[in-house]
Image (cartoon, rainbow, N blue to C red):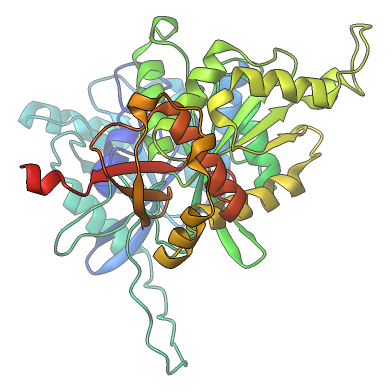
Length: 471
């Protein structure tokens, strides 16, 4: 914990060995609580990064950041008060120190940005905060952090080890596809989005700013996990929470609103968009949230395209549906669901396979169907069709009906499913040419009619039978 821009997120990233928290020179980048894990002295510790705290700030966002930090304060067994040694102590520092001391938990002052003997001497001035445990560190360069972690480990009793009475061996679980996942011998997994075990389904909540993504996360999880405000761009770091539903675990990730490059000005905004794209690409399912009041926009189509092209399964959520129906105040007649979906499908043609759900996250309506469809789509994404089934399917298809120019027609000898998530099929053909889009759509529709694959894109790869001979 600490005031804005003292290096809390840098320390968090250093401990977890990740880039989970966005770091920059702008104050107030972190807003929600970010969770991770680190290992020290043979023990596992859970660490929470909080937003910069300014007690008694009347503004909405700082107040919500403070409320989120208080939740972390109550959950924690030990507290690290991060202070920038290069700045003079101010009234908020003393206020925060008193708040932490009153909690009755072990408190450690991390005098951050100590890079040199002169600054190490300056760190002694921080003893005026009234906290005995003081450790000069440099989060950026990793200096002095070992002594701080030793002190934290000594102050916290080791949790009793759970005894497993079952005779069955525990199966090894592999990490899911993730750009930041640790690999190699001795690699570890962090409890952050994208670095989870395979028994979880990762669900990214994506969309433009201020369409209700954070409200949806809070509604689905039954918590106040994410800060919600009418200010567009409130969420910056991705916030995740695990929900158990009908025996399955789903990790819902609230991402920052994605907007065009020309619309992002602050570095934190640019980084939050980059991180949102990365978390989308590490997810299994994407919930594309659309504002029912504003309708489907070009930006929605672009964001949906990101999910489609990266092979994520997609569910389209039309949020704030009550605002254009039962709670409409502009005097216009209530919106017609069928007409609205027809217009939506026209704009998002490439997401023809995605189910559409009308809901209100604020009023908590339609959430049951979101959970059911998410579970169903996750199963469809991992469905596998045997080669025998696929070849029997091919025998029944009349490819002459496919609207393809003669020059682009090809003969399929057989096909097989090479991968799942997303389903990927290899076509062994008589010609080494790219599939014509009309032929690809025809074949995809036939496969969906026969085998389902609802909510997930289907990929095709072509291999000519005589390609090796010609080489």
